[in-house]
Length: 121
Image (cartoon, rainbow, N blue to C red; front, side, top):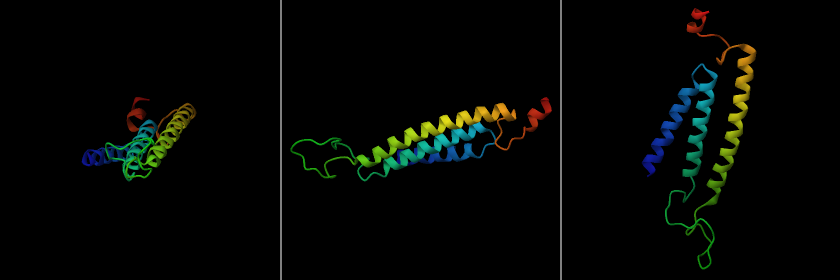
């Protein structure tokens, strides 16, 4: 399970960085989203007992109240907070993308048209 998780974090990170380096604004936004998903998986996997099975998620009577018998709730809370912040960030970037596209007439990050678009005009 750890190998699959590590591979998925690596693929999400690599794809996110590759999309961040693209010239189009929408691709940059998708790259940021993939990178935030990779960071969320990484934070969740770094919880001390996050990958353990058969651990109680909530307190139960008769079970000692230590992390040997329960999952650590802190990584889960951090990831949940990061998901909400990432959603708000993506919504803000999409609004900025639409405004930039309306004002500049292009969705390239550097503001210039590609050669293909220039040839068509």
